[in-house]
Image 1: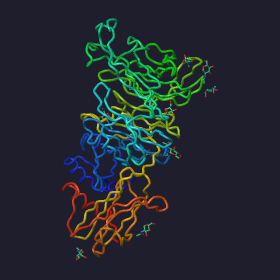
Image 2: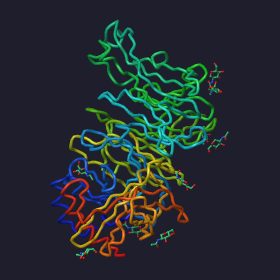
Image 3: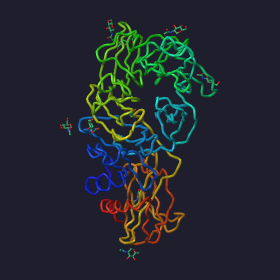
Image 4: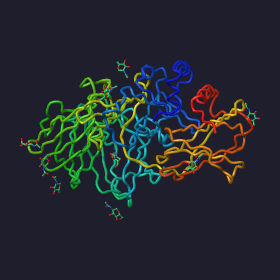
Length: 530
Ligand SMILES: *[C@@H]1O[C@H](CO)[C@@H](O)[C@H](O)[C@H]1NC(C)=O
Ligand SMILES: *[C@@H]1O[C@H](CO)[C@@H](O)[C@H](O)[C@H]1NC(C)=O
Ligand SMILES: *[C@@H]1O[C@H](CO)[C@@H](O)[C@H](O)[C@H]1NC(C)=O
Ligand SMILES: *[C@@H]1O[C@H](CO)[C@@H](O)[C@H](O)[C@H]1NC(C)=O
Ligand SMILES: *[C@@H]1O[C@H](CO)[C@@H](O)[C@H](O)[C@H]1NC(C)=O
Ligand SMILES: *[C@@H]1O[C@H](CO)[C@@H](O)[C@H](O)[C@H]1NC(C)=O
Ligand SMILES: *[C@@H]1O[C@H](CO)[C@@H](O)[C@H](O)[C@H]1NC(C)=O
Ligand SMILES: *[C@@H]1O[C@H](CO)[C@@H](O)[C@H](O)[C@H]1NC(C)=O
Ligand SMILES: *[C@@H]1O[C@H](CO)[C@@H](O)[C@H](O)[C@H]1NC(C)=O
């Protein structure tokens, strides 16, 4: 969404650039478009934005390849990303709109990998996996289920009211045939289906009972000698339940997708890697892959998507990672490439990543270790590419980038903050409501007492991104107390902030002195005298 501060960025480029070196941030609701300064690190390696009315410092995006809206349609919905990494100022789940404007800051949930919408008991819920991830790509954390009022419902996981989860379990086995100790250690890949209501385990699968480490590519080296360097030979990183109830799992370290019989755990077939049951067509092979998902399936034919990392730290099998859309023929037992999706900057992403088919046939990619998201037409044309961090500093990354429909109805009230200048009797009011997707307009209310009992409507303004600014001239001095009310469709009142005194002509600074410089500029551009 274009906003006042977006104009600001264009209106005062030299001012912005000078300031950016001082504070390394972008003003509220900023989105950079084809900014080479951003890419070059002029705004720091983890550029973020900040707001007056919310204590929030989410990553700011740069649409390095902007969407050309005149000939392209994009599915409605919101972008779910969870930036993290040592250069990311506020790691955690963040929802943005299609224009890169913040909708929900969920960073209080901490560093997050999985961040998606799932239906639980008939209602859409946010599902997250948050915790500490280790260098090896394995983490220790927990799953949270959050309803659309942003309340934590459960620390468990769910699909169809059962949970599918992966785990890593250290196990002692004989590694002598792989060049290791006879009493060596592996980190076994395990997945389970659990009944959420009862906690009962419905199904458990151990890679070590079905897959010989000899068919995998993450070599033992000098590892596997103790529990702390246990050999992660398999590395499960995605599970998808098929329509027949069996499971499609991805093994990053075996370069293979395995189809697992949900009744007895047998491998029904395996695709890719050293012992593929399928002939892999031109461009259809993958390595170190992530996020395998069925698109369509029947008994003779299926299509699926996955993120082909094509390399990992210190190894590159191809020059760049790719998103893949593959066709599987179960009669000829062959896999053909339908379409590949090439990164904007032809880079290799060493870990993580996602491919999501959109309802209109486009494909949304999250580039994992590379802090990028991009969208493609069904024929593989790049429609837009945005970065949420700079490549080449320390690092910014995001496990996946996915789009979902979502209606957020926060229980916490809207938030308001203002800056009043006695000098010219102008008050800039900042309104936001973290996570709310329904607000269409903001109504400014004035009252003579803090209860708001005699409140009158002063001004209505269309919502603009996360934070909307309304600037009013208070020279008449009729109302000492101000509040903002969120209005939805047909002006339905959705929530109201507290009435707050504008004080006695004291300039109220919200966060730091540097804001005054911006306030002066914002006032010029948003002046609405009432
Ligand atoms: C946007 O798309 C239109 C229609 O295809 C084309 O004429 C125009 O050149 C494009 N603009 C940019 C900036 O790519
Ligand atoms: C989970 O447990 C509940 C309570 O016993 C039961 O009603 C439900 O059918 C179980 N679901 C599955 C998938 O086993
Ligand atoms: C899965 O295993 C069950 C029980 O052994 C068997 O009846 C079924 O045919 C197997 N399914 C497939 C697709 O192989
Ligand atoms: C499976 O899909 C293929 C390709 O769309 C189609 O030709 C075939 O008829 C389908 N088979 C069944 C059993 O639906
Ligand atoms: C699958 O392969 C068989 C055998 O080569 C072929 O006859 C059939 O047309 C293929 N199916 C599709 C959907 O391409
Ligand atoms: C693309 O890659 C080149 C070479 O690595 C780098 O200089 C440039 O900054 C990158 N561009 C973006 C937008 O990341
Ligand atoms: C969201 O819902 C709208 C309306 O049903 C639909 O057109 C759109 O494709 C959906 N978006 C996603 C990401 O599912
Ligand atoms: C703002 O919109 C509300 C809802 O339609 C209306 O009641 C109010 O009078 C409007 N305020 C102004 C100042 O126009
Ligand atoms: C600001 O408003 C006060 C109270 O109405 C008035 O006394 C003062 O002259 C105004 N100042 C300016 C600069 O307009």
